[in-house]
Image 1 (cartoon, one colour):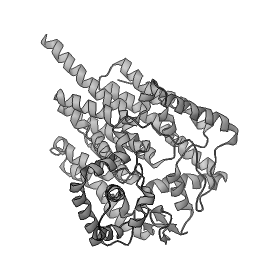
Image 2 (cartoon, one colour):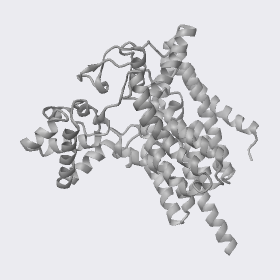
Image 3 (cartoon, helix red, strand yellow):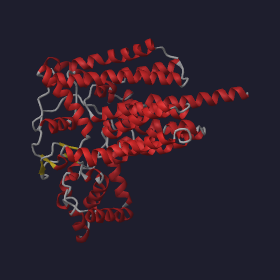
Image 4 (cartoon, helix red, strand yellow):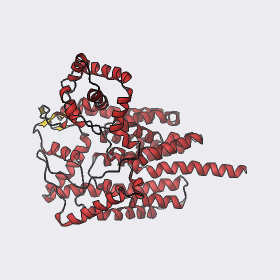
Length: 468
């Protein structure tokens, strides 16, 4: 077994490998979503467009759950700390990034520990360590104030504990930890609650007999927190605007729009669609790779019956135009399943917006940052190494290949342990575009998934050798 000294040495090695990124990209990196979340908090009750879509009616909530409120509050409190203690939003931003980097380093060390616990060889464990320290996309996500990085941290721990419950004797401590991390899955990402719920139901046969009451709590804790505590109590008390319905309708909107652009609809059908999105703007706004422009015209005043009529039309049109529906889906999320899209990274901090404090990277390292980014994309787009930077390798090809291998070997226990990963793959079909951040949990759990395949092979090879 790994000693505490070796564990923290591995964590320290990981951290040291990320230090150059912490220095040159100080105070860190983020995307427009994070800037929107920070401005949402610091803007107070200043008006914001519904769903953060320009052109929509404006509302004046304290916060919006368009992005997870938990993430928004965590990010903003760190920045508020920097302003209060050091009079610097930069320091607050960096404080969060530094803590996240430390936690990621410890998390990766724990992954190495688990791989060793699974009986994998020294060479593979070293390879996993190289992946986490030297694979170029990893450090950028580690220093990224990003809701998906925070969710990924929670998911790695959830997947590991879930796997240990499957492979080893379930204990009360493991199930309690699984429950607590499961709640964090829901708080840090909207789809997290469904990943938790389905994976929890799948593990019931393993834990129900000895932990019945705890099993019920494990299944219900996250839904109760998200749909009762947050939605029915905290949101009304603190004037938090719930997330819009348009997020759940992103795929139907994109597929209907594709048909509208290529085939069109009759007047009655156009009227149904027009009650949900602006039909007249579809041809101008439609993008095959991004649903947001058309989704931004969503009618937030649409009734349940109008939405239901839209969904009925969507289903009926799907039977008539299945090819266009598939092409619409491929345009949005095809890069997750076909290796033609490079892993994109955040390298800057966007300009402040709507009252958010100014947070800037240091001008002194502008040239160094650009050299690092140029090197990244130079390698990522190179003929030989470029294939390693295709997101589909990690979001589909590797996990599905391992899953198929486990099924062929009838290694149902290890396949059972992969359920959280398979559920994350399923959520990719709901994404509004092929952005690497959506596949980040799959990228960062790749060493564990490959390790399961190697463990199955070693078990098979050992059994074959004993028979011989």
